[in-house]
Length: 202
Image (cartoon, rainbow, N blue to C red):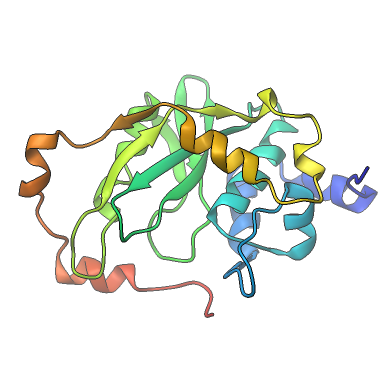
């Protein structure tokens, strides 16, 4: 059985607020999955010092769970031709925020100012578009509580594809009324250019 080292535990203890966890996630190199797709556990993401959005959400949710937060994931589902996103929602008193690992200038951290999960999910809608300006975000998932999973998920040596499957099967909610999809206005040119800014180069 794998486990966190004393130094890793010390680091996790220091990351005792959502803002600190987000700063740490931002400092990780982006995982471009060269060679093969991965879905590392928090332990092995921590040791690899790189993460994509799903791995970052898993690590962030786990770290928050060590400071009294429930470890949640939320799936943001797009149209075909775009990439889905996964964030780690957290609650401060009665308001929701989210941790988010991304390589772009958008789809990032959310302060805990949202009254419910729908408000939180909708805050990502206008940032989610392709290079031609088409807005692609369509659904958000109910929360997946990672405490309901096998106890060793955070230190698993194997990729956590079963969590991906659970998150895909969980109930999802539409974000855009079907009658209005064809009327969605495209993102402006300046928004598109801003969306091309990346934090880490391939």
